[in-house]
Length: 331
Image (cartoon, rainbow, N blue to C red; front, side, top):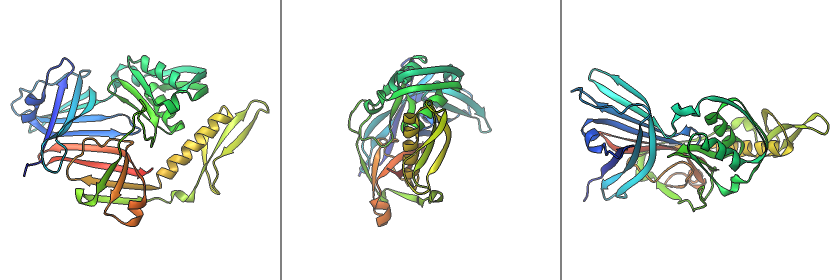
C-alpha cells in the first residue's frame, strides 16, 4: 500500500526551482482560492533559525504546482495553480521564521490605484480587455458575457480591482486575476471562459471529517428590485424579478437594461446563498477550484438533493500532510 505523500513545486520568475531549497524549511504552505476575491493568495511560512534563508524581494513572481507524489487514495501528479506576485514579506521570532505572502494579481503595479473614466456604448468584453491591457495582462471573458452591452459605465475614483469586482456582481460572474489574465465568466457556468466543458465532482462523507450545513432564511426575501432613471420622463422607475418580498437594490441605474440585469444578478446571488456547506477534506484534491459543480453523497436527503457550487478552496500543507477546506453554496 503506497503512502499518501504530498508533492509541490515553487519556481521563481527567472526559472529557478526553489522547491529543494524551501522544502527543509517549510512550516506551512497555504493557498486560498476564492471566486470573487479579486486574486488568489499564497502564504509560505519558513523557519530561518540559521539566518541563511535568502528571501525573494516583493514584486518577484512565484509559480506554484500542488499534488501528490504517491498514494492509493489520491490522484498522483502535480496540478499547476498559477503564478503569484510576492506582495509582502514578514520576519519574526523566536524561533526565527519568514512569512511570504503573494497574490495572483500584482496589486503593487497600479491595480489598486483609484481612477476616473467613463465608457459609453461599448461591450463588457471591450471594457475588460481595456482594463487588462492597462496592466500588461489579457482578458479571458466567457463568450456568453463578452458581447453584453455597456451603455454607460462610470469609474468614479475607483480602482481597477474594485471596478472588476463590481462588474462581477452586476453580471453575476466570477471575476478574478489569475496567471496574468483577467478571468470573467458566469457563476455556475458549465464551461470555462474558453468554452471548454468544466468537470463535475462527487464528494463523499468518508473523504473528510468536520462539516457544516446551513440554511439561511434571508429574512424571507425573494426576488429583487432595482430602480433606473427614465430619460424620457425624468422619473425613476422600478423593475423586479418577481417574489412577494423582493430585495431592493440601493443603486440607481442609468437604463432599464442595466437595472433588469442587476436585479436578476442579485436574485441569483441571494438564491445561491440560501444554502451553504463547509467541509474539511482529509486529503486535498488539487483539481478542485471555485465555480466547479459538486454532488455530495452520504449526508441527509436535503443535503444530497442540492446541486452545489464551490465558492472557495483553502489548501494547506505542513507537518500533518496536505488537507483542504472547501466552501460550497447551492447552484
